Amino acid sequence: MVVAGIGVSSEERLSDLGVRDSKLLAPKERERLYTQIRKRCKIATVTIDAQEIDVIRNEMTMNACVARAHAQVITKLSPTRAYVDACDVNCLRYAEMVKAHLFSECEIVSEHHADEKFIVVSAASIVAKVIRDRAIAKLGKEFGEIGSGYPSDPLTIQWLTGYIREHPSPPPIARRSWKTVGALLAQKNQRTLLDF
Image (tube, rainbow, N blue to C red; front, side, top):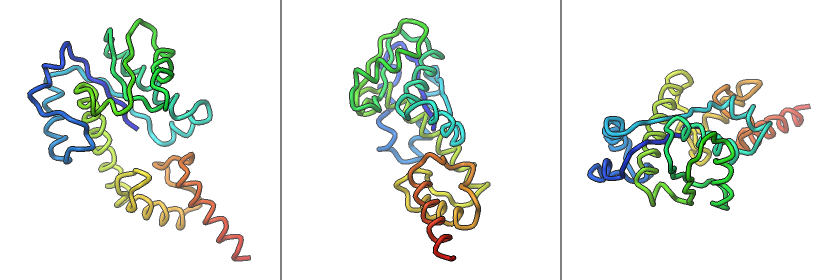
C-alpha cells in the first residue's frame, strides 16, 4: 500500500498539467504527470508492505491504518490544511482519526472521492499509483506475472491460486489478512481433508 501527499502553496501550481484522478489516466500519462508533479511540488510517501499490513491488522482496522499513514504523510509535509480521501463511511470521523495521529495543528478536509474533487488529492493519487505500479512491476520480475495485486484482478487471483496450490503458505508479498488469501487457503485445506 502506498499513501502519498503533495505540498503546494496553491493549486495553480498544478492547474496547467491536466491532473485528474489516477484511475482515469493511462499508465504512460501517470508517469508523465508524476515527473511534472515531482518538479513542482514537495512530495511525501508512506509505503506499507503486505507483511507489515498483517502485523498492523492485529492492532487496528484498515481504516485506522490508512488514517495513520495519512497522518505520517501530513507530518512530513507540515501543512496548515490537508485534503484526504476518506476511507471511512463517515468523513468527519475519518478526519478525527487522522488528527489523532498528528502532533501539530492542521485542518483536515476529509471527503469521499476527494481525488475527483481536489487537484492536490488527484496529484497525490498519481504519485501513489506510480510508486505502487513500479513496486508491482519489480515484484513481477521476481515472482512472475502477478497482475495488478488488486482483489478484483483475475490475473492476481490466478497467480495466487497457483502459488497457494504449490506452496504450504501464501507468498510473502500477499497479505494473509486478505479475504481472498483466506478463501484460497480454506479451499486448499478442504481439498486436503477430502484426500483422506
